[in-house]
Every structure is written in C-alpha cells, then in structure tokens.
Image (cartoon, rainbow, N blue to C red):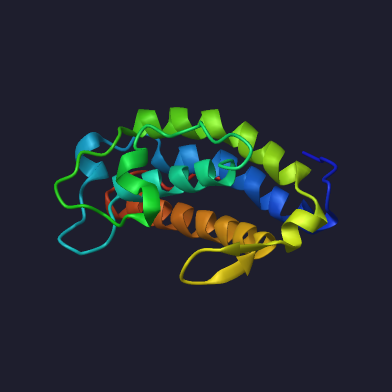
Length: 164
C-alpha cells in the first residue's frame, strides 16, 4: 500500500506500521483465555499483557490528535505499567477490536506528521527525545512484541504466526 506522507522520513516507518497492523491480530488469533495468562513457570510477560501493551502503544500514537480515544484495558497499561499479578486483562477479542479501532487513526497520524513536529522534543520526565525518535522506537517495539507473541504461539503449542 503506497501512501504519500507529509515527511519522507516516515515512509519507512509506515511500511513497518502497515505490516504490524496485519501481523498483530494474527499473532494473537485463537489463543485461549487460559493460555493468554500462561507464563510457563517463568517471569516472562504473558500474552494478555504483551497484547495489551502493544494496543496501548497504538493509542498513545493518537493521544494528541484524538485525546478521547482509549483502549478497553487502558487502566492496566497507562503510565507504562508493567505486568500485574492477578489482574484480569481484556480478552483477545477486545484487543483485536481495539487494535482495529485505533489503527486507521494511528496510520493517519503517521502520514500527516511533518518534519517540524518530528523534530520537536518530548520531555518524558526521565528523558527527552524527538517525536521522530519516539515514533521509531514505537515501531521497533511493536515488532518486538509481535515477535514475542509469535514465540508464545509456538511455546503454547499453537500454529506458527502466518505472514501471508
């Protein structure tokens, strides 16, 4: 899918964003509620947390352009909360629905951001970075989470993630 962006700097990010938009629902497809919480006796983040964290990240991408848009499990993920023992996370179906709701708005935000905004600085309290650096990290992190979800599929004896 070819799309003209406001800044040529985001064109590569957009390609990855579009891939992730397709891969994420496939990565969690068919995972049972029980398996979504299965950590296989490790301290690794489970599927329910990983999926919600990825969804939250997409919602953060549109927080300036659509500040009222929120995911189902926002309270569990806001302020970069880590995994919470015993917490009841949204269902896989909720995550897919939230992902499908936010992705078009996040794509539009990525297309329309210009160089001036990309160069502007964000103060996160513990560090400062440009909007471009934050978007780059966000796209990188989505790939990382999708990879972890793909690994969980295999570890939990589900079919491998399909990329086609």
